[in-house]
Amino acid sequence: MQERRENVVNNLKDEGLEIEDDHIYGSVMQGTMTGPMDEDSDVDVLVVLDAEEHEQWAKSENGPRNALNAVKRKLEKKYPNQEVKVDRNVVAVKFSDFTVEVAPAFQYSDVNSPENPTDYVTIGGMTVPVQPPNADNPDNGYAIPDTYGQQSWVGTNPRKFQSMYNAVNKNNDGKLQKVAVSAKKWNEQNGKPVNSYHMVMMAYKYFQKDAPTDASTEEHMNRFMRKLPQYVNEETREPVYQEQIDKGMNREEKEKAAEKAWKASQKIEEAERLKKQGKTEEAKEKYREVYGDKFR
Image (cartoon, rainbow, N blue to C red; front, side, top):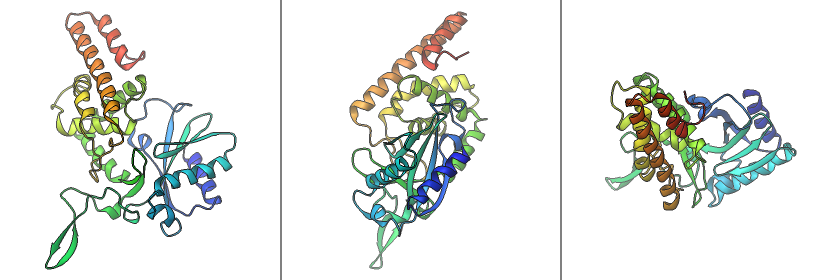
């Protein structure tokens, strides 16, 4: 993965991109990959661009889309035999062994109008920025394209979120990790009604708000799936900047995702009933309808 990341980044530099920093983030960093690396796996690479050299993207109204299209053109030139496409907020390069998804980014404070949590107040005739409680310093993170509906740059801070995620996971004996992976597997089994990052955020939200203490992983997973229709219909915000990550889902998409989650929760309730009746194999079959054939 590291070798492929270096090759992709070096090729972008060869094509004229001024890159300040780059690193792998997402499911690899979080440990929420749903299986061994294969042709259906993807690795997320954050490529931090120099805002002075690429001001036309950092500051212009169509900057997010233009940045993605420019990265796509450059990667197509370097990888003429691979499938290269813009996929929402990344440029995906599909190799035979796995896909690399490149997210062009800027320092969070370098872009125009990210959904910045900073408020402004007037004190003694002067207007000054004031950070709301628990909001991270915008200078510490990055802005990546958000092309759901209207174009904008949206904040992300992988390192800060990872530390928050690890703390919640540790406090729950590693069960957040297990629930997040199981939830992603269900999501993949059902045509990805929400994106993977959204699913991980909802699992994180469950352990922050609704998870009982001392429950087993199985109990947590069942409880999470029962809460999932509600979570899908609510706003989901990433915990560092409190920016809404599901704002691109329209009402119809949310309703369809919630319906799939509700049907899964009904199957889980049936599986639990069968289990209590001692019908272990029938219960496992019902669980497999939710989590896939590998469920044991």
